[in-house]
Image (cartoon, rainbow, N blue to C red; front, side, top):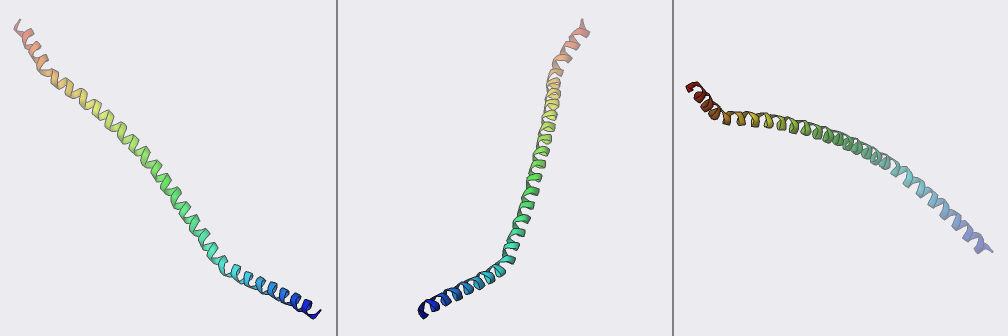
Length: 98
């Protein structure tokens, strides 16, 4: 019978030791987990900022592209009129000679 009591005592001692070891492990790892959570929050914040800046960059790029297209069309129109100038001058000279 004493073997049963000894087995129960060893089992209880083992459970107590397991509980103490688990408590120490949790106590030790809690600051590490908190630090990791803070790091994840910081990374998420930076990712949100990068995403916001990327969106702003796309908007700026779109504005620049529209400005380039406008200036290109204006410049192209001006070039076309300059190319027509010799013909207009020829017609003008012909009309003056008549």
